[in-house]
Length: 207
Image (cartoon, rainbow, N blue to C red; front, top):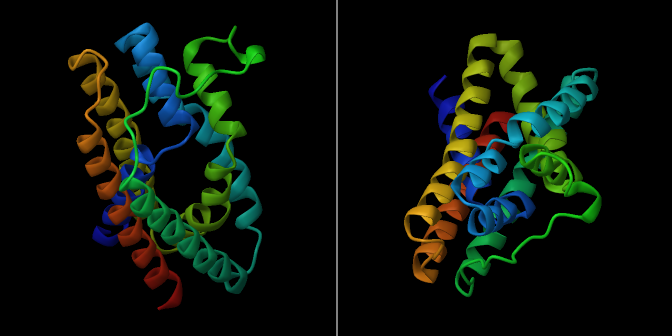
């Protein structure tokens, strides 16, 4: 249970902070339209990821355990590479500006939350994560203990959404200015947490 909670926190926090279309959109929207619009973007994964998880679990749960383990190891490697990439880029990263991400014209008529959900669905990163690391871990945890699996997913999304909400609130509180040094420090923390999560994922599927 504790290992699942730690893994959920590390993956959720690391993914929530990591640079990507949804994080960039949350920052951009907050700078342009204020804290309310930014918060609505921050909760978008609760909509989009439910679709991704449902489809991923439907496919993965039909596979034999040996294939699930292989996919889990691949997922751990993917998470580790993502963490390393963030650590390398953090040294020269610049604080995002108001024009960091633009919503495609066809999506700009949607409510703000659904804009974020659509952007997330079009982003390959959540799909790669849930088809490999996320769903294989969740299936394994569920077979061992449904309560542990639920704890993992709850902690993951609390961490992921909470950190995006914190970024939005922080931007609003500092009048939409983000210190570059602070931003780099946050990215470094994100990269380290993803590496920790990758190690835990690898242990789960190898041992």
